Length: 148
Image 1 (spheres, rainbow, N blue to C red):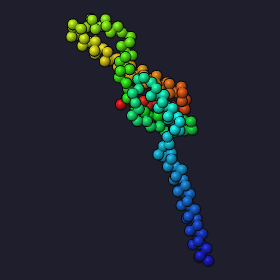
Image 2 (image 1 turned 60 degrees about the vertical axis):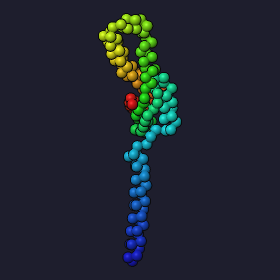
Image 3 (image 1 turned 135 degrees about the horizontal axis):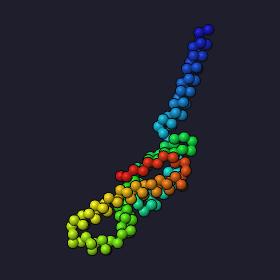
């Protein structure tokens, strides 16, 4: 009977379509990229914002790489005052001021020298932040902290 063949084909087609939709929804999560658990994300943000050198977080993206392996990308804005304060705390600024106040060439050398220390300080701060994140959140394998 042709009716049974037609009815069987419709049922099999419907089942195949249902399985295809189910697989599509399951795989879409992995193709788009799932983000890390909300409590882990909030903990990392809190850790970053508690550092005196971090002014604010501009962008935070995360991704689950594998079971228990996370990747984060975070764009942060530094607190310039905290960076410069850390650089200047190791120097006697009053003495340096007395040495360079009457000589523009020496003042210029001083400013260039101090400005050259800022990127190095930012690099050290980023390294320390990455170590601290890895210590508190060992599942985070890849950390990409960028300066805004």
